[in-house]
Every structure is written in structure tokens, then in C-alpha cells.
Length: 202
Image (cartoon, rainbow, N blue to C red; front, side):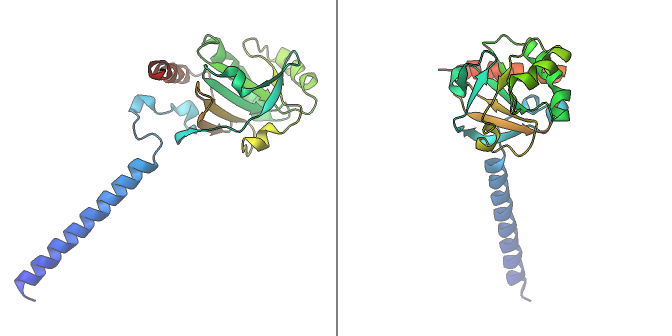
């Protein structure tokens, strides 16, 4: 084979490989929801299953009730980041993580972060109250969905499921399954998120 032809093929192969590498790199940066994150922004081990969306997602409207029986929707919390946890008293992992969610809320003023523990128990408060008292939950309020429809509307596949919602009422991330929410690294992680939200606020 002439030396010139061999050199031309080698050059063509190099160009093809470079093009493929560029396409793969572009795809990775476009598809990763954490492409602009520094290592300190990534979820700590205690909540490593937290999956960030590539961009904020609008949330379908849901209604539920508070412990006084007042009907609410997520719009009631606009202006404050929300950690929405869907759970039930018959869900053992839900019960196990609730004290940690309670401690997480205790670390933040209500204007900085609201943890909304939304029960889908059929009996509502009569199911929630005994557990609240036994577990000594003191920082969380009781919320329940008497229609038991919130999970389906939000596309929840199992319990517990937790949604991180920004001040504009958009879903930023979702975690399926239990987590150690009161871990100190998790608390610091949420402080960084809240600080960014405050800096980016108009």
C-alpha cells in the first residue's frame, strides 16, 4: 500500500475518533443534571440516591389537609424551599426515617426550609397521631391526603418518596426510598442549597 494512502487513512481514523469523543462528551454534559455542580454540591452518602432533574420540573396540583383539617395545596408554600415526603404508617421504612426528617426540620427556620410529611393513610389523623406521639415528633406538622391520590398524581412508585421543591414550586430532585436525613453532611448540604436559592432569588 502506498505510504501516502496509509497516512491518509490514519489521519481519517484519528479525525473519526476525535469526532466520536466530542459527541460523547457533549452528550454527557447535556444529560447530566449535575454538570455544573462542584463536588461539594453532590449529594452526600446518606442521601446518595437523590436524583436531580436536568432542569426544574413543574408539579401537578395536589390538595391535602393539615392537622386542623384545613385544605391546602403546594402553592401555600411558595417562596420557601420544600422537602415533600410521602409516607404512611403501614410503611416500615417510612416510620424509620421520620425522626430524622423531624431533626432535619429542627435545624432550619420554617422560612428557610419546610419539611412536609404527607401521609397517605386512609384514616388520616387517627392513624398519624399515635405514631407522632410514640416517636416524639415535635418539629413536623401533620399533613394527610384523605383522597389518597397525591402519590398517583405525582408519579410516586413506592413509599417513602421525597421531592425537593424550589421556592417557585418546581421539583428539583427526587429520592425514592428511606434516607438518613439528619446526617450532619445532609444538613450542611441543604444549607448550601438554600444559600444558592437565596443568592439566585430576583
